[in-house]
Image (cartoon, rainbow, N blue to C red; front, side, top):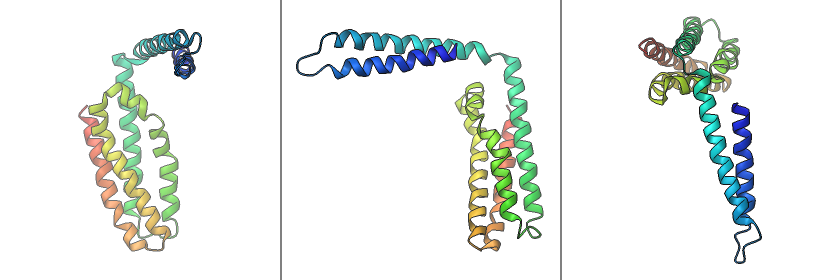
Length: 176
């Protein structure tokens, strides 16, 4: 149903654009009609997508399952960040690879579902949880960048900050 709604949206935008292009000083034949059909298709597509979205995942059971999955993914990331932080002195040669694996693995999987989390939690709750996740990711990327530039001591200083941010996100997610 979402695919059909998106198709209506795309067609509506196309029709509206073509119709509006005919609104020159001397309007082309049927430009107003084509524009009107485009607007109608956009409205129908928007309503179809909205209805399909509401019916596909607004149930409480789905919300509880997704919230549990979110907490599990945050916990996994927090554990990995903690492991990297705890063993940072021994990881000098493997430091960037460990962060790369985390960012390309667990972080990527979590980021791929951020729209679903935002939709089910609502933007306010989502942003409270996601804030720490995003800051942690930036700090890890910063540590990786500093380490690749050859400043390993400075890179290690970012890890406790990243660890604190992901822990705060985990705590916020547990209060939802």
